[in-house]
Length: 180
Image 1 (cartoon, helix red, strand yellow):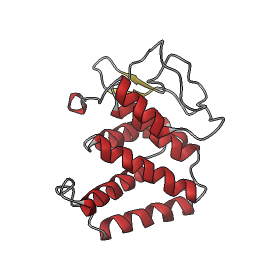
Image 2 (cartoon, rainbow, N blue to C red):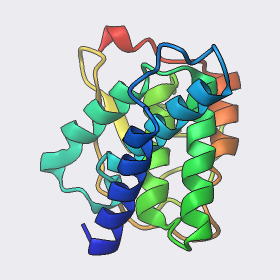
Image 3 (cartoon, rainbow, N blue to C red):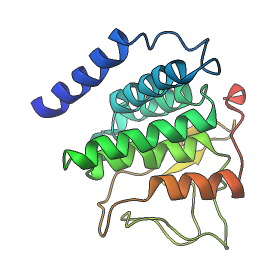
Image 4 (cartoon, rainbow, N blue to C red):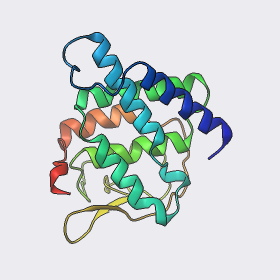
């Protein structure tokens, strides 16, 4: 991890915890609680290992981190993803590493199938075919998610993570993470 990435993460975490992000109980009670919860989720996303930069020995950590994010409300996760993108984009740091965090999160968060003939990829992820929305994830014989492919590059304009979030939400619905 580069020094600039570490300092950005530390800044986010410092802002989050001095603002009281540990309090997620009051999420529905007011704007400040929602902001705190969103800030907490942004920090969780930022501290998940990025698939782009990970070696296979870190893949289980990526899945665990994303399963942890699934405990949050969908609307809060979507808001946090928007904040994450906006912050990094304004710093010119919404790169393939940052995008890969959201790419994996969408696949863990939603009940995405291995194959879907009616689905088309969002973004220019190297290695993905037009009918494999779960890629680079797979499910083992027990149904647990695992990463099954190394990052193979990204080409084109920025990944539209929120657009894909909305599509997966409508098309597949949330994954029941208690199963895993």
